[in-house]
Length: 551
Image (cartoon, rainbow, N blue to C red; front, side, top):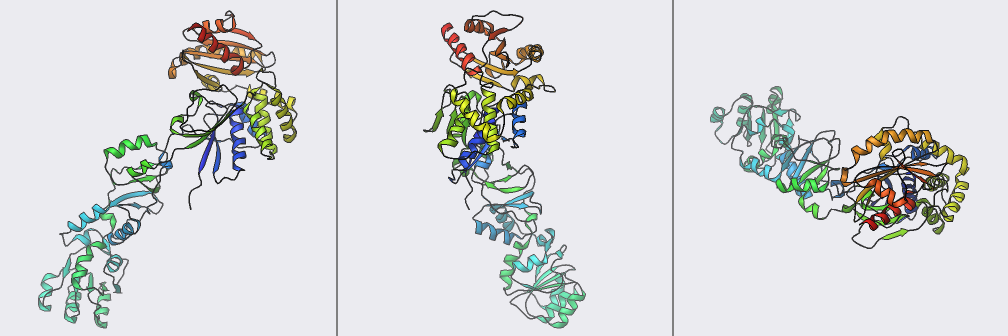
C-alpha cells in the first residue's frame, strides 16, 4: 500500500496566536476535502504564553515542532530490505538477497537493532577463501544449518547443537585406512558402507553426513546416539555436499560489524550526499533514532527523493519562514501581510487579503466551503482575531474581522470582552521567562534593499510591567544586534489599554530611522508613539518609506 502523502501547514518563526491557530484550522479544512492527502499542522518555533492559554482553554493540542523543512532521509525512497538474524546460513542469506534483488543484507538483533552487514562480495570472498578444513568449526556452525544446506535430515543427535571443534573430512578411502584420517570431533562425509559408518563412530567424530540417502543401520544409529554423534542423511552426492557445505556457516562469521556507516531518518540529504560520495558502497542502512533498522538507501535514491510539501499561513517572507524553506515545495500561501520575498518554482494558490488576521480568512473559507466549524476551532480563530487586532483597537482591524470574531464567539460560547481580558492577562504574564525568551517571543525579521532589521513586539495591559521589561531588554538588544545579518533591532512595548507603543532600539542608524519615520524625539531611552499598536500596518510601512527616502 502506498504511503499517504503528507502536507505540512506552518506559520512563521516565533509564532503568535494567529500563526498557530490558523495552521490548525487550515489543516482541518484541507483534511475535510478528502483529497487523499494528510494535512498536518506544525509550528516553526516555541509557543508563547498567550497561545498556550488559548490552546488549553479550548482543549486543543499544540502542533508538533518542525524547525527545518529540508529534505531528509525519511523523504527518500527507503528500500525495505528485510533484516536477518546473525544465525542464518550464508546459503539462506544468499537466497534472500536473490529474492529481494539486494546486494547488501542487514543483520539485526531480536529487538531490531542493527548488528552488522553482509554483501554479495562478502559471500563470494568467504567461498573463495575457504581453504581451511576447520572453517566450519571455527564459525561455530549449527548442525541444523548444515543439514538444511545439504538438503538433509537429522537421523540422530541434537540438531540445535554446534560443530565447535574438528575438521571436515571426505571418507574416500578404504575402511581400514579411514581411521588414519579421522580425529575426535571431526565431521566426515561418507557413502553407504557400514564399515565406514562404524569406523567414524569408533573415532568419536561429532557428525556424519551420509550421501545419496544411504541407509544407516539401527546399531549405527544407537552407537551414534550413545556417543552424542549427529548423523545427517542427504540426497546429494559427495561432490555436491563438499561444494555446498561451507555455505552452512552463520553470517555472523563474515559480517561487517565495526565502523558501519548508517544514516538516521532525520539526517538531511545534503549531509549524507557527501558521505555517499566518499564511501562508494552500493547501499547504506537506515536506522531510527533508537538505532533500530528500517531499510537501506543508495545513491540512486537521491535522484528520486521527494521534497517536503508545505503550506504557509500568516507570512510570506523568506526571513520569517521555517529553516530551509527553499528546499521545500510550497503549495499554498494564506496571509494578510504585505507580499514579501518568497519565490516558488511553479504557480501556487496564493490568497492574500487586507484583513487584520489570517484567522479571518480561515473563517471565510469555512463559510465558502459550507463547512461547520467546531466550537474548539471557533474558539481558536476568535482568539487569534482578538490577539492580532488587539481586540479591534489596531488600525489593521476591518469590518470583516469584527464580523468573523462575533460569529466565531457564538459558536465557541464565549464573551469576547471577558475572554480578551483573560487571554491578554495570561499573555502578559512574563514571570519566569528569560530575557531571551521575551525578546524572541514575537520577533520578526524584515529585509529591504537598504538594510536587514528585526522588530519584536510585546503587548501588555500593565504599564509598570512594560517599564520593567524595558530595563531588561535594552542591554540584551545590544548583544543580539548583528546576529544573522541584522544591523538594527527594534522592540515595540505596546500598552493595549492606552493604545500606545514605546520603541526601544539599537544599531547604527536605528534611532534616526524612528525619528525620520514618525518625527519624534527620544525620551528616557525610547520613542513614544501614541496610537501606534500595529507592527504590520503602522510601523513597518513607515520604516520602509523612510529607508527609501534616505537611500
